[in-house]
Amino acid sequence: MFEFRITAEEAQQKRLKYLKVLYIISFTIPVIYFFKFNFEYKVHQYNTILISMWLALVVIPPFILYKLKEYVYAAATVIGFAAAIVTFFLYVSGGVDAPGIFWLAAFPLAMAILLGVRGAIVGYFTVVGVMLFFWYLKANGLGPNVIADHGNYSFEKSFNLIVFLLFSAITTHLYINGEQKYAKKLQEQNNNVENLLRVLLHDVANTLSSMTYNLVKAREDQDLAPANSELDKMERAVADINSLLTQVRHLKSVKDGKTDILFKPISIAFVLNEVFEKIESIANQKGIKLALDLSREKMFVNSEKTILSNVVLLNLLSNAVKFSHPGDRIDLRAYSKDSEAVIEIQDYGVGMPEPLVAQIFSLNARTTRSGTHGEKGTGYGMPLVKEYLQMMGGTIDVSSREEPYLQHPRGTKITLKIPLAQ
Image: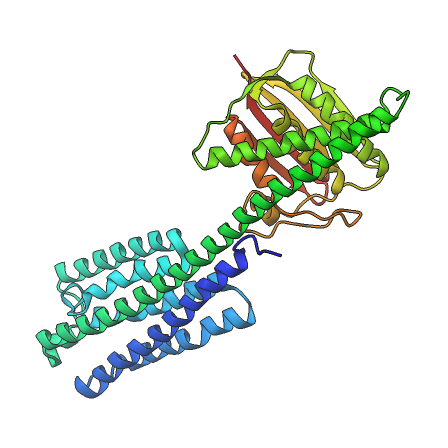
């Protein structure tokens, strides 16, 4: 079976490789300058501070990463200690006049690689803070200058520049190479999904055509078919699946830029009553009670019936049933507010932890869980629901608790807001 997505764990492994490389570089380069200070400049008074910071850099990040299993804290400590060591070397080398002052440019680069956009922003502010500190020292004639007292400024500037260029070249090459492999893997998996989708649309459509033919023959062979018979329900189910496949084809065409998705005014009451009837039989089998509170206002939204009923509402209600225990209740409520149709689905089941709620719409996070009776899922339902709602101009909000708290019951509450049709 195809692997559908890059998981959060895989993305973390990618960054972990960069962390290891930057860690090795971060404790190797200070060693070079430590030897220059001690054997070339004959300056020993800073050894206690430098050795302490270097040992902290060598020991603490691996402990956090491998013992505490905390990548973010490990990355932050690598960057933090490396930045402290570089800043101290620049401080004793003349501050703003230090021959290696351009090493400050490595802070945002390294922090962006390890911690993303937020890391880069912290890196920029760190550089600004260090530069302001160095300018203050220069303006007041403060701070040592080992290079001016013991070294050759031109040589040290050239030496620092060469080491900095090597550092930048190595880290940039490794980062670009890793991103290219990552992008290639994403493209391969996207192609797999595209191919699987084509097979699904083609083969399932053929199977449904055969089922439709057999149902028609069965209907012809049945002399007196009672109203609302099981055969009627099968016919409606096949029709719904056919309609859903049509909408998936249409959505793919929209995504490919070949056509536009067309919505028309749909009655919320009509759709909810239909969905309620479908889900009620599933809920009854599990011993779960459903309650429908529908406003008497006429509410119409611009949508497509199959998408709104099967992809959005039926998906959400199925999840509510899936994560509820026998004897629980599910409340379905709809009303209008501020030119919007509001649909609320409240279950009183197992609920979700906060990290799962935060990632529920992500395709890259692992969000699938088994239901209370071992029901399985794919993890694609909620992202698809949100995507369709956004196409309608709507929004979805999810709140959940695993345990009751004050006025908040245990379970999950989903609130949909869709603009009312003019």
